[in-house]
Length: 582
Image (cartoon, rainbow, N blue to C red):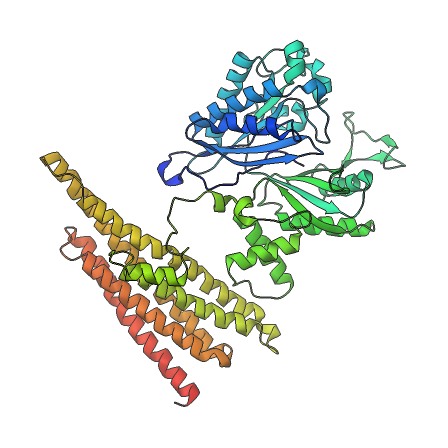
């Protein structure tokens, strides 16, 4: 259901490397049609320094907008407060209608721990915000999920029971708020109430059906969701509710754990949807929910036509989905990230209702650490020209890492060609595993291309530090030592990882598609260049290094890697020569 995820259309300005703790906050406001109001409410949050709005996702039929903020706890709390305040000024709940359950101008406002933060950090932020909202804005509300102060209120549905129209409950023992006024006064009639919580990451996911029937969509959702459906005597819709010995309704559990859901009709699309909250994507991933919806819909003569995300999704969800569908097709999973995303989008039908732009929907593509991938984002021509320029970086270390990445790519290519070779269908998984190994090495070595240049920059920064007195000289010396160690560790890691590629290359020479044996051979040459080039950089960076124990250990390893690379490359080249009879 359109409730509580994520993110905006520009690269995140806050870098995780500079932050001790990073939280996400996902307010859901009860306005999805008036773009002027929506922009003003989002702008109130974005005006807080140190916080960025990453996504604004309005829904016309639900008359609800999901806004995602990210930042450190204190500025994020301030941004959430300003957003709630602006929403209370611009939204009149007395006039609100929409398909989604709601009880206030800001209906829910959860905090989610991200980099360096814990659930306790998220709960603390929720409690501080709720206290201030109640005290300064006179808006009542409830703490839910991991911020709940009463066990039953962990469940958001309990907090929101009766929705806006049922807020007379504020003055009752059952409905007394955790913060704010305990009566449905004139001010609260306009603002409604809010739920502020702390929770794990949640994916809001809608599945499209080729029907307009809300009742049939609900039936499918009830069969899927963990809470299932209430059992009735006779007719499953209007029959008498069956009760247990304590007088509580008996329920038939659904097929999927950690899933909440309902069915609804979306007028703007002219279709019914399953509106799902996947509250633990490790328990029930997106692709499992999608396939189960397909199965249950088919049993009712209904077809799933696609799906849509409300807010953002972690990259891993789409990679896992792609791997799942590729394995069902008995195809290699050792392909590029971009290709996997295309397969996931098409398999899940994420472009059914409109274009799906990964750069605006995948969390990791929005949260980036500055220009860390500047070099590998270049074209081949630009990288070559940048290397040829008068700047000392990128230099041999970055080029060595790139040679290693190309070696891994060639090994993965031969594995993929072998997995798809006619007559070798029973071996697809064997070659898929090799291709996956190659792509993992490729990713790590591509990262090292920029990391090696960053290591050189750290040395230059350290050398440029002031040295006017004893304290400054000592700080500079320590900074140079730290940077030098890092500048040696990066190429040493490149050498070690590039050495691993020989196992893949040799396997492809021995068992892979024979038509691609020379491609594997070029891979071996690239891997040798990567190892030897990285070893050169280790040696030059540790020349005259003060920490002799570290230097001796690193140089010993570097020498071993060099000798092994020469031996392995020579052995593979001889195998190829014998195979080609040259």
